[in-house]
Length: 172
Image (cartoon, rainbow, N blue to C red):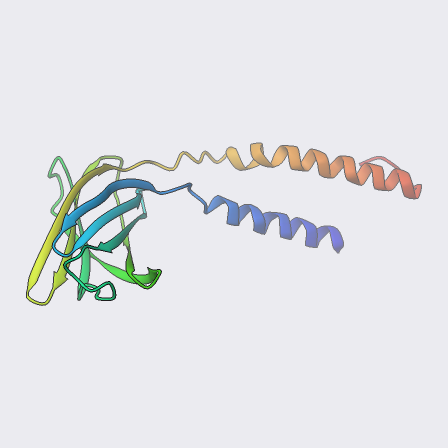
């Protein structure tokens, strides 16, 4: 039973590690748009991409005033698809003055994309544009067993040492 629990725990941790895709990429930094400097971070993986918008207020706006709505619009630079607009949700504010917005964008394939950040304030829309590329998840089905192999070998060595210490047969 203890070995079954250990195996279950190992598989659960492997599944959690598989969900990590690495650090986001800086797409745009401190581009002035209306009363804000816009910084755009992206984790643009094919399937589900994540875009983060950080707004730093300039001297034109009070530090605690956030836009009414923030949206992210994406379109392939080849124009093979129509532009789609996705809402960016307010996640939190840095030091009570930097609003941080998060949008999930589905990318269909590796391509170069035009990105527009739309900042809605009262009756005005400020727009910031940028370009970025998407990347594919290079996760081959063989990677997980390959990466787990050293841990399995260490586990077998540990089991063998524990059996030798208790006097149990050492065959596995």
